[in-house]
Amino acid sequence: MAQIPRGTRDFIPEEMQKRRYLQQRMEATFRGYGYGEIQTPTFETLELFTAKSGASIIDELYNFTDKGGRELALRPELTAPVIRCYIERLQMAPKPLKVFYFGNCFRYDRPQKGRYREFWQAGCELIGTDTPEAHAELVALAYTILKNIGLQNIVLNIGNLHVINAMFEKLRITDAVKKDVLPFIDKSQYEDLFSALRANDISQQDAEAFLEILQTPDLDKIMAYVHGQAQAEAELARLRGILELLKTSFGIADPRVKIGIVRGLDYYKGLVFEIEAPVLGAEKQLCGGGDYELVSLFGGTPVPQAGFAIGCDRALLALETEQFTFPQPSLDVFIVPVTETTIPLALSVASQLRARGLTVDLDLLRRGIGKSLKYARRSMRVSL
Ligand code: HAM
Image 1 (cartoon, rainbow, N blue to C red):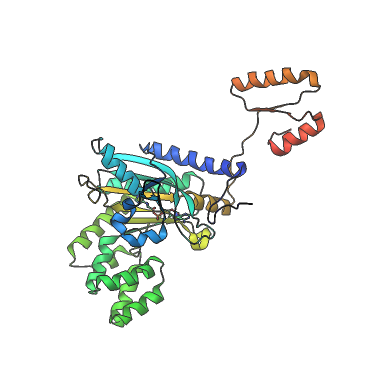
Image 2: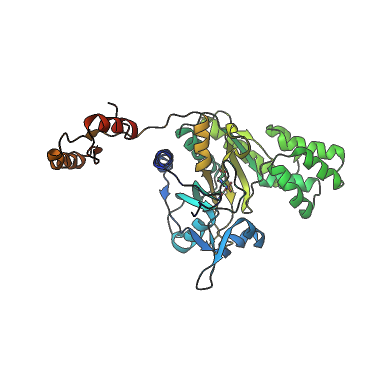
């Protein structure tokens, strides 16, 4: 018997019920923030994903050659596809352009709980503005979506790539060393990071100070560390403004600064943020996003771009772990024809009630009343 491919899943009705609940709540919040839905193909040209990241990304993708000899890939994410579509069809649309999407993504990851080879993202892209209020609204949207689906315990971390780059410059770290140490920063492996810095001739004192700034939520300390580096100072002042808006205008009590957020994808440049659900342990990152540059790389007219994506599978796992009570579907009416001669009448009554918008089912196995009611109660969630 053929088996389901590794890293993929089937979803039976009970599971789909939860997934649809999630999608509906998320969609309502996206729409509430003025976003319109967009859909792009499941596969794209391979080049779309290698353009920024280079050929090394191919190891992480599902790619194939089609019968016409075209190099294609199942999408690992939706930002590059949405930007491709923007350049082809939406450059003239009024700005800012706000689009959201739901879609399955494919990554050749090592499967484990919360990490799959086919998974679903809910995300959005905001094109044409990078004011602090636009970025604050974007971060607030991500946070609000996760709250609106019912999550209790989530943590929002915000960083800025210009600042971390200024920190690297201060230590005169070369690009090659930077490439080596970034994965340690990304995974918060500070002991390994410390050893790598020391191995690259960074003094103990400098390495310790670097590590402290990576982990501190104190903007003043970070500001003092990058003092004299104009762009980093300006970005930190901007970050302070965004944090203030998140607290005062959006009511988010505890956004945390984490300068050590570096994000795995190569297209980010300034603001970056992540939202995690600590209950999930290893695969706790629910959402990632920020400010990026892909439009000019793909040949479009330069314009600010930012966005985020939420992993729907992990959001669902987090809700289940928090023991969230999902709404249950229920039938309004279950009809049991008491004799065979009443079957046509039962079918016709069911049709009439359905036409009036009720959810109706009926016994199709010619079982007696007792067995039918038992079935209705157990499998159809009717309260009898
Ligand atoms: P990402 O951080 O690669 O960002 O993915 C976003 C989310 O997708 C993650 O936080 C995680 O919840 C989920 N995810 C990623 N890989 C897997 C996997 N193998 N199994 C289950 N869930 C997974 C992006 O994809 C960017 N395109 C986000 C973005 C949009 N940035 C700007 N606009």
